[in-house]
Length: 132
Image (cartoon, rainbow, N blue to C red; front, side, top):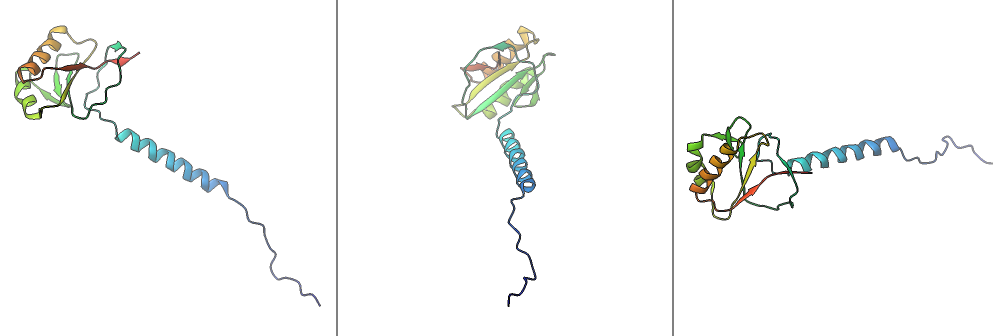
C-alpha cells in the first residue's frame, strides 16, 4: 500500500531581486570608496584648458590662486606676505608644489604666489590644467 506524501516537493529557485540589491550596494560602496581615495587639495577654481601628462605625486602641496586674488595653501587661506612662513612649515624636502590658478586670475597674483613660494625654498613648480 502506497501512502500519499503529506508535503509536496518544490523545486529550488534562485531569487534574482536580492542579488540585484547586493550588486547595487557593492557598486555604490566602490564608487564612494574610490572618490574618497582621490587627493583633492585645491579649492573649486576653473583651471585653464591644456594637455598635460597625469602626475603621480606622493607629497603634493597645492597653492591655489582664485579669481579675486585670494591665495589658498592646501585649502587654507593665506595672505601674500604670510605664504613664505606657512609654506616653510609644510616643506619636507621632496615635496612637489602645484600652482592651481583660476583661468580668470590676474597674472600678477599668480606671479606673487610663485615668488612667495620661491622665497620659501621651492625651486620646481607644476602647473595644474584641465585636460581638454
